[in-house]
Length: 561
Image (cartoon, rainbow, N blue to C red; front, side, top):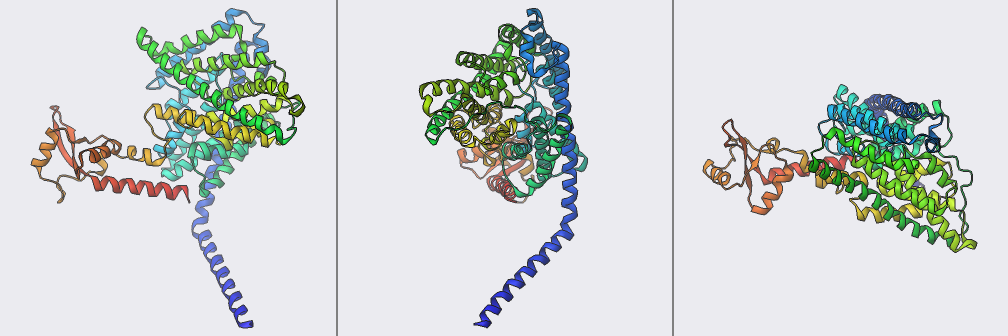
């Protein structure tokens, strides 16, 4: 009996010794590189944290200067006592400034935000536009300070992406490294903006990188902590919303009410998103119909916002005061419904007018108002089995925001960290799960992914849908002198029949042609100086499939590393 035991323990010791030896070799040969990368992540986290802090302080300063308020968190209470012409004029002037900035520094007059960062991570090796990104940050700062109805997370995330892009270009980072550094910057920016380090790290993984690879986790957490430290050194460690009566779940019998709230919040989130997309389409139509210059479009939206704010100043800016009132249960049922409706309208006008800002903070406000309204009804119908209305506001805030962002995990944690209340997790998780599941069926999974789908970037469906768009036919085609190239007569006949592909076309356009025509190759053409097509290479079906397979394998390796 002793010999089998001795053999067993001997094998275990040998395996442990080999594992330790392997670990030491990895530490010797790869350890310094990892430490260096984590140091870069720390630097990016600090830089992105300061960028988010500067953006937040800039909004507070400009907002207090323009509206003359000493406390921007109580903005709408202050604006109620201002003359109507000031409330009307400031959004118009702000919109005019935004229009001129975007017209001068962006090619399409459009503000860059989270959707562009997701696209950069998926399709541009972790890079984003720098010139347009800086202009968008300035335009969003003016929007949020002069009466625009949006949030600060969108421009902050893209501004962080500009920071990581600058670093990636300096160190010539590859795609994997570029995406990891972009995730670090986003995590730091979100953590610094909302004082939420856990949610900031998960937001970068869940929303931007869209995977939870182990190799990316450590640097992203380092950057998120760095961004949080930057904010807490300035504003302290208190949560964004201090709840006076957070409420408590009375009994498990109350959970079905939160299931219903989750479904309602999913519908509300879909309405909010659809309203924004409808406003964009209407804005495009009106702009083309009346021949409105693009730089005047934000000013026109500002006029609409200013007119609405005269009667409902709650729509101005981020809306933290109204959100706090809802979470504290200090609004009546009619007020909650009315404010939610007009906030949705104001957000749609802001985005439709291309004024800038993000959608997360507005979704928090709309969600809190929706939850509070539902809470008043639920507690009124069954008072003996119900908790506080504020608990429903708390759950509604998370449910609408999670559905809009398409990020149930990180949004749930953001809500917890924003309020500091971790005792009502069951209610929030139930509402968030159902709202996200329902809203993702009514749009392309989230607000950001639907934005990308509307511009032709099929990121929502996963790598298998967008990877082909990353390859040009010219990069995969075989040259004319390749021994396997077809004869010129056959290719000439195919070109004359239109069965060919341009050298600048993507494989996304070429692959359906192979399947439709049932052919093995396509001539690749380019236009010469006289305007006629010139055969410059041959694209084979098998080469397209090989390139696609390699790209899928590399993506899978990155996501599971």
